[in-house]
Image (cartoon, rainbow, N blue to C red):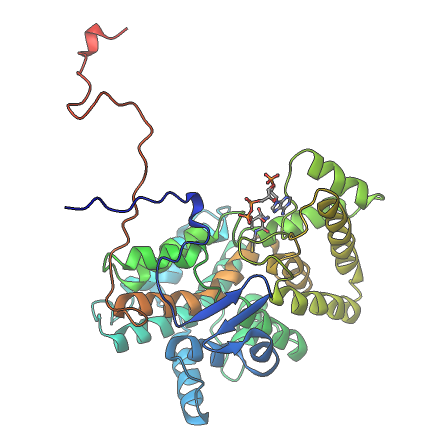
Length: 393
Ligand SMILES: CC(C)(COP(=O)(O)OP(=O)(O)OC[C@H]1O[C@@H](n2cnc3c(N)ncnc32)[C@H](O)[C@@H]1OP(=O)(O)O)[C@@H](O)C(=O)NCCC(=O)NCCS
């Protein structure tokens, strides 16, 4: 029997572990494509709901299909009563990402299709997840502030309804459209850490909710989705700073990372960051809050000069850098930023989970089972001799 090929690649950079038909990135050229369509095209012309349909079904819907899909999402937005009752019992000071992750199994318990492992059954579950994640986030925000959760409002867009459920105020249409564009920009990103976590979990034939719970956990980390909240923390820290370039240099000299900059795949400008930068500037002008864009741009400028000086010319602002000021100006609390990322990425996660379960891009689904190189204590294949407790010093 031949020995299996053993290739060690810590962090799996550049290792293709599956085929996918969902999205594509050219990190050198700064191109992101969902199901064949460039992200710029979708951000300008599509809606989040249409993009979610595209990710799940591989084609753009016609008008009737889009109406049907929007209606199914709208109908699924109501949270079952027992979930609201559970949320009310939880400690109010826990992080919203922990609340979101803990809510996913509750959503599973409320799903009548949980045991239906057909493709259609999984698409119905995906629709409920897309519909209900924003409802959970908004309900939690209200419950922790001592207010009653609000029911969804028909006639608003996906993003508009989220802003309504969060604040109880009719959203400004321009801000609702901007948030919808943010959701499109974050909806998928190939095999990022959270998507890989989702796919790895469902490769065991676990259900979609188990995969999504893993995805939410992976997204919460500060090197992944948690970066946007850390960017806002940094902006608040430098708010009173006179010498931003000096502050950036000191951070980098200490070996700290500038949150929202750098990317494992993009070695040039992140195509999503351009939209968010423009949005941050425009919203700042509209709301009289230009300082957040000004501070972000000053940090970016200083960091780029420092990176250049150190020969790290590929580190640029990523999707999280300007989304922080954008979400802040939309009235979203800092600690909800990563949950908004999750409420968008849910469409991509579900599309990937379905692709993984049904082997839609490769010959057959296969359980992920990478190997490791053992570098620990070793006494040969017979094993070390066990010393009884009383004889150990
Ligand atoms: C996202 C990230 C993990 C990708 O990094 P990567 O391509 O895997 O590269 P590494 O983490 O190995 O970093 C490579 C080098 O660039 C530096 N670097 C990368 N991003 C940096 C940042 N934001 N600030 C300062 N230095 C950074 C690292 O310190 C490392 O330097 P070294 O070689 O001297 O040790 C990294 O850029 C980062 O930590 N960014 C900040 C967090 C963030 O914004 N995450 C959201 C991503 S969408």
